[in-house]
Length: 459
Ligand code: NAD
Image (tube, rainbow, N blue to C red; front, side):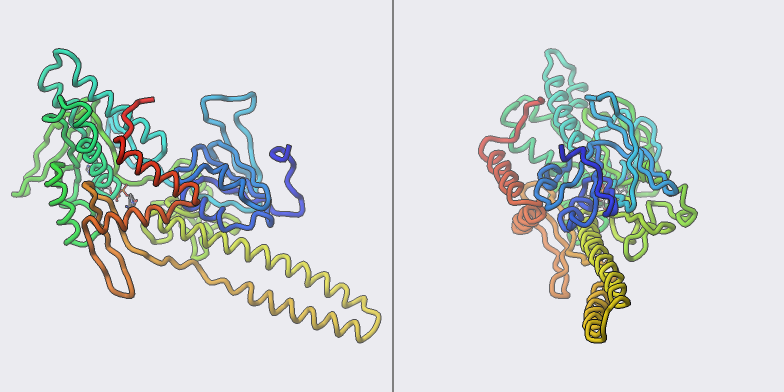
């Protein structure tokens, strides 16, 4: 079967780790005929089934659902493990590479705060979202259990989101929508006690947005009855409450205990183990703290055949989908160009060999002209500039069919918030879908939720 066929020895093996925004954009742009392409990722892609992207490529791409556990830079080998539920006789193996792209993203930062890993839900993978849905419904049904005490009902129905960045804000808004649009109608007895609280250590939420939009978000949250607790830094988590240090207006600090039913932890990114390990093999990464330092062509510093994209790469841009997808598309173009250059160089070698064996001047001159033409093409081809990020703006959903946007347009800045921005947010969301199939499916989901409410089943 083609899946198991050996790699073509005349081509370089390009291994791509991860199937997030960076890797998927790269795969979209990449002419897969130029390389033996192997994709490794332990998770389904959040954007689009990866198999669906790959089956539309001209040359076959191998995909392994596995986790890259270690990269040996000297040996040019990636070690991979199948960490899925179903395992065969072989579940650990190695993949040699000529070129490697690391797009493995980041881990959830917990800053070593005790209890966070064991008790929180996160918001990174598809499975995380499923866990959260299950947990919400479980809290609600337990709160409705016969003879439950008032305090316990309040605790179970208190949904606490820690981290006032865009992840926490968007989730809190969506969760309150879920309650207002659906849960309240389905289970009216929870109506007085269901409560969403957003906890943030800094003095305000959404620090990357302008003051005006921060204020707009805070007042919309107030209308929606989401409480925002700023200057509240979580220090400890147990299975039933969080303990936070609250800074009072007079500057004094106080420890407060906040009981919760659902805890969603969204305090940003940390480096993955496999990336940290690679960094320790590369002296050029010794001073890098937040991820793989890369040059302006996204080459990992200290290597010449390893590139990094997205949240695991530190190229002085924010860790956003927008940056990752532009980086991935850039690498796709870069690799297509590199392959073309290599083909031209081979042709040139071949031509100069023919030239030296030419029988007469006429033939020699003809080959000479061809060489000149190829050299020109090669020079043009090699003129690919470094990666340049083009910032399209920041956009976040804040609930109640409103969104906030800071967009740079025609060299001016537009800061907007409200329902039109929400419609813009939805269309931007659709334009980010990778295929028409996905666009239609996402639209159908929105229509379905509007007509019949969100899905409250747990399986
Ligand atoms: P973030 O780093 O932007 O925000 C995390 C927040 O958690 C910070 O404000 C921090 O002060 C707070 N925090 C940290 N420790 C805390 C503690 N112990 N107690 C209370 N608060 C604490 O993280 P994010 O929101 O996950 O975003 C990560 C990246 O992804 C960002 O670059 C963001 O722009 C991007 N993103 C963008 C969008 C969008 O554009 N709509 C959506 C999601 C994520």
